[in-house]
Image (cartoon, rainbow, N blue to C red):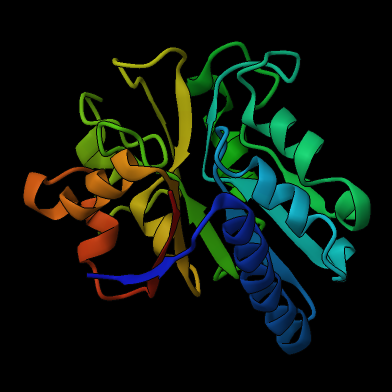
Length: 227
């Protein structure tokens, strides 16, 4: 399976992973003058984002976007973008260039074209893409029960961004597709706890959505874990 990086606790996980991601960003800044990062929401990456925000980088030339987002406003506690602004766009990273997925439109289908334009404008390949994993094996907003899952994870698909209804979770979602996620120098799977490790270890056998990342050989994948 992919390369595992096992840490003894979440403090070391956040510290080591922040250093690793900063190194990826620094390499692209040196090579092309810009860098780009796609990140996931939820509770797991909050400590990582706080560490990363203190890294000494040319943040004004770094674009940061989300792997997926709930179709809610910034005032909602469920907004991944607001969490990103609160935890990452602070300290040294306060002048990073955030590219949100959620538009002002009431319905996701009405904002999809604008979201696609925004993502198309980001320099690629991404320096890194950070993924989480759900208990049902979903990653990004590729939920097993979504009616358009096959479209979201079509390796030959041309769209970088799609709208989806997770069915088993609240809120309509907007998400990067499989080809967009794999257009990166490295995919980082960031998980904490025994349950999530079990999900990832059994993902290929059970054909969870995260298995599509783990099985492919096009893009390097590392799995960062702490108990």
